[in-house]
Length: 187
Image (cartoon, rainbow, N blue to C red; front, top):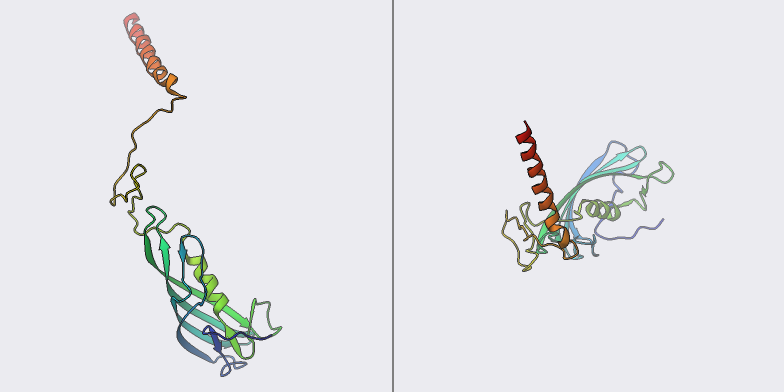
């Protein structure tokens, strides 16, 4: 199995088949491709910071780490673009050939963290990001961004197809109050 080499490929030559040995690695590199879809993505040139611990175990190399990046996001409420910090933790076993039913393997004394980190970052990206928790969105009439905490209450408009029923509710209320008044007189 050939390994593609890129900044997320880490050599584990010094700890392969040496259970109990470990090494910490810090690295910064871009994905080199756009990661994520929709309203939040990590751009290809955006640096991703890795803080990783590589541990040799009997089955392979256990990788524990944290990745952080900045995604370009668009607020789902007001459509403002903003930077979104993304931090993810990951834990994955890179097995020696045939040693485990792992999805990832040690190949040529290297571990390829790109799919692990990319998948963790994609899963951490929000489906509907907001630029601030109190974002009120856009005014539906003017399209202008509303100030935080603004509740837009649209003027009540009656669909012309239902306009004939508008007076019906008032007539029912008047009839009920007349019935209540007559019942009070009989008592």
